[in-house]
Length: 150
Image 1: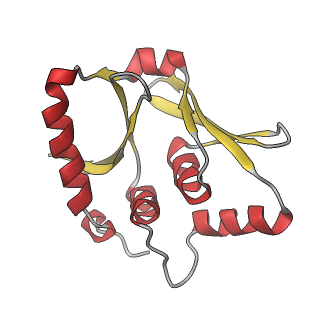
Image 2 (image 1 turned 135 degrees about the horizontal axis):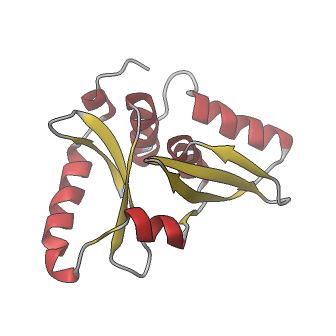
């Protein structure tokens, strides 16, 4: 769904939404990753490639396809993810980096049922107005709101 800054801690979070369900998965991330995700969502291309842009460019250059991103685990408050390539190779990654890369490559993002059960927040349809307000907030936010210079 997007990135927002949680107040009062001023900590960025990325919010993923379950397809075909009513659960949302909030993942706290760093400001650099928040900026990278916001850039990708807004279709912004920096003058020089950010790390995630570089990784996408390398994948394109060597003919590798990122098939999916999996949010696989939550241990002691830390989320874990894997990059899954078309050939079956899996690489461990931070969810924020994996999401930023997935947005650049058009790759689907999957959350394990265990992670969604442990950390997912269910928002019934009657609370959808609150979610719509969040979407409107996301439409207004810019990478500069995160206070990083990248």
